[in-house]
Amino acid sequence: MKSLSFEGQRVLLGRLEKGEDILNGLTEFCILNGVRVGSVQAIGAVQRGGVGYYDQAATTYRETRFEEGMEIASLVGNISQKEGEVFLHCHVILADAEGHCFGGHLLEGNVAFACEFVVTALDGPVPERTFDEATGLMLW
Image (cartoon, rainbow, N blue to C red; front, side, top):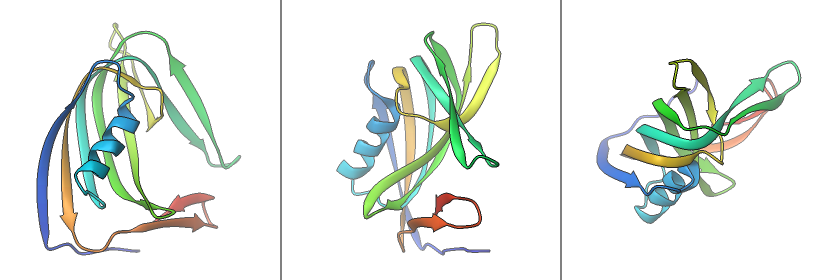
């Protein structure tokens, strides 16, 4: 088990504009506000988007894309560093008009219809993602 300890936190609220890419917008918000480690939560809706699934046997991501509007039933993630840059690792649950839900990694290309979010910035060590041989993933 690996763990880190933090002494303080700062909470920021934000909203993305209609048409913004959610993952890119959240990352930009963190960079502009000096957030290098923390967590993110969001709700809202996408005009189109998709989720990713990590195929453990093939050690690759599979993508499922949607061209219709969907609700963001939940979006959660963490903020760390990868190759020296701010990196958000987020999961999302998208719900269609019938209430069917699709979940997985938040991919680029999830275009906001509306997106309100909370970022909790932590004071302390910034986790750096490195390649993990056991999983084939970049983990901190």
